[in-house]
Image 1 (tube, rainbow, N blue to C red):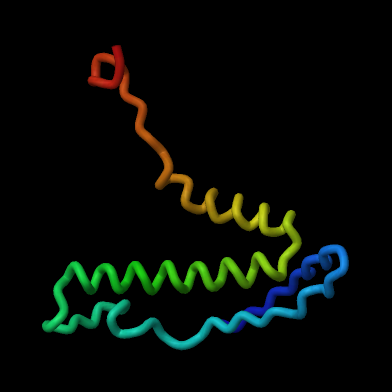
Image 2: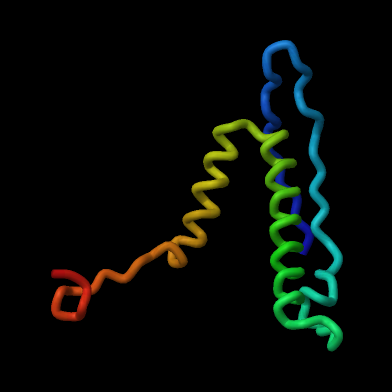
Length: 103
């Protein structure tokens, strides 16, 4: 399914030109080393680090492009939506004292 979304661009800073339009292309497949392809000559630790570096690099590139082009309020809304999507990963279970969770 193809999808197109449109957003306003950021206003220019004082004495600067507004950012141009931004095109983000999401297509193709992840590289083999991400999709589970394993090179027997590469240790699992190095392979995992390569995957982490790939995702962090791609995430930073996307974030930087969005930060340069979107209004600040839209960036704030996106941040809230992304964190809300990952909310369960930030939850800490609260134990009752009789379960070893307090005094």
